[in-house]
Image (cartoon, rainbow, N blue to C red; front, side, top):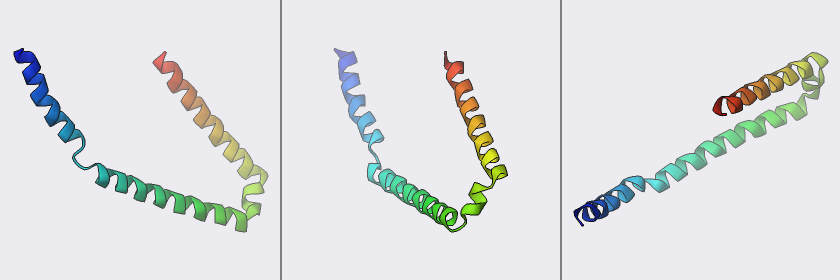
Length: 82
C-alpha cells in the first residue's frame, strides 16, 4: 500500500506542475499567432500590389524549386522513422 500512497502524493504535485501557467502560455501562443497572421497578411497585400514579381518565370521556377526541396526533406524525415 505504501507504493500507492506515494503515487497518490506525487500525482497531485505533477498535476500542479503541469498546469502552473496555462493561461499565460495560451496568451503567448495567441499573440505569436496574431503576429504571424499579420505578417502573412502584409505579404499577401504585397503580392496583390506587385503581381508581376510573382508571375515572373524565374521567380515561379525558384518557388517550385523551394517547394520540391521542402517536400524532399519531409520525405527523408518520414523514411528516417521507418
